[in-house]
Length: 70
Image 1 (cartoon, rainbow, N blue to C red):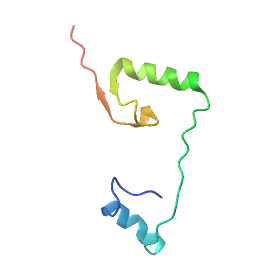
Image 2 (image 1 turned 90 degrees about the vertical axis):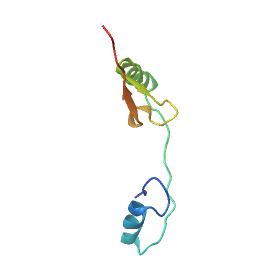
Image 3 (image 1 turned 60 degrees about the horizontal axis):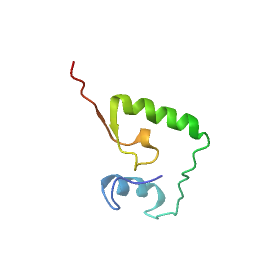
């Protein structure tokens, strides 16, 4: 179910209330099955946004819209 940004924050506590306050191990996959398509998405996003490529997947991370001066 995942929590908030930190363990024991409000969202984390709310979600664990559904499991009698038990924490369960979970695993996250980080496999890109179509690297060409993923790179196309990232390249297109980079045209309009500054993205954090250290976040995975990059298109789900925080983005800042680029400002273009004409």
